[in-house]
Length: 394
Ligand code: FEO
Image 1 (cartoon, rainbow, N blue to C red):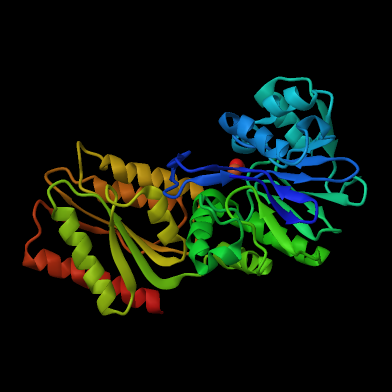
Image 2: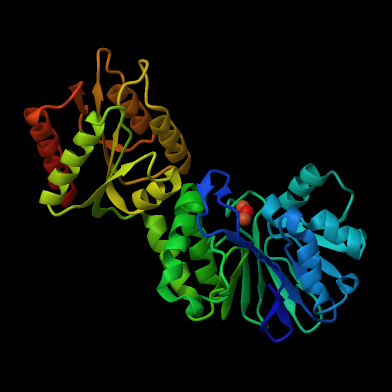
């Protein structure tokens, strides 16, 4: 895709990755973009690069506007290779002596990634850089998404270059929020749930800090997905809300099943929850990707996890899901476990251990049913769902 002028003398020169479907374990069903930005000023400045395999495309995009060798300054807001992978190729092309601005931890992490003696110019939190008519302000944003992450703000253009913050994995012709409307929000929510949820407390602090700075923001330019221009504060407010994890009257029933017994339990539990007016649905872990289940868990008040006992343990997809979820540190959930077993029946106990390790609020010791549930067993599962629904309404 050709570069686009997003403000006077400021260009999106990123690339679109139409085909990526797995982003370190996250299903990117609509691909992604790696956004980079070129500012034409007395010192021509490039903010971030792209994944290594797209570096030539980035240089070709820049070449549509200016000879890449005329770039004077490169800023790396974040070390993860989807944004820094193009640095070796870009610096080789424009000159390895060109100053590379990054946070102090960015310096350390870039050196550990690329083992190159580039002209690093580590900046302080709150540091500024004059590039001619513009001043760039650097704001450390540790853990959004790595310790090295920072935002770059340009007051003259009123643009916040927010790196991973406020991004979405979405590949499309659209470059701006108003071209997609509400349709972009599920992608932004999924991104928050799967990439940033564990840092939610830090993000709350960051939003407070940015609010106190009272930055005048006309555009928020993340490194993935669309640029927020119609209502940039909408995504900031959404982050504040998602970060709160206020539980809704909603339950996710995530499970896997061997011979449909745990599945029957899941559906009876869901029916019980719905009877109590709870928004609930069963999510089979070989039908729904772990990243989509986590997105649903984000604002759910309850999470119920079901597994049959397989070889004295959990079904592999259930272990996978619990491992993934634990890393994201969800909060404010009422949780419970259920499952069918044949003779030993460890699954429910093992799920409970995992849920307790997440410091979530365990409803009770769970629901175990031997082999195939009969009508009475399904009634018990239905009533269990109802009781959890009632607890969620309190
Ligand atoms: Fe888009 Fe943390 O990289």
